[in-house]
Length: 164
Image 1 (cartoon, rainbow, N blue to C red):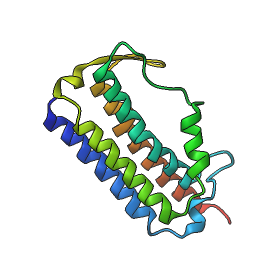
Image 2: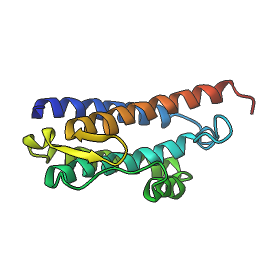
Image 3: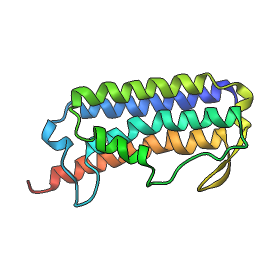
Image 4: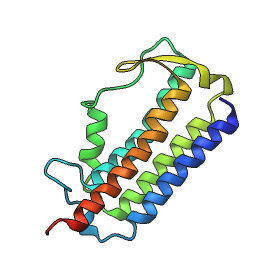
């Protein structure tokens, strides 16, 4: 994967996050904290997760580039992953938007700093076996952010049709 391909992924990630934040900034605050259905994350919990996952996975890619012999990744029960949701899932929108933007900035800077040969480096995921840095960036950053943007949109759709 070339630096131009990395830049294309970064541009798509930025477009996804910026578009999502643009939509959310126009919403009434009460919508942001309601569960769409029992046990599902409200919008703010998903945003807190998004803010945590982008730099986390970018730094995992960086780790593989430095030392591919160490396993990478985590499980869904990871305390940092869950802690971010607990710590920031009830933040105000005025606090969350800069948090997500800062996470995006850190993620992008980390990805842009990877040496070009790092993209083909292979690491061993705790859950998925061998993966290249390119596969990690695609799956755990770009696709993951898109999935959560779609999840938030589905949550908002559910909340629009749900009785209050």
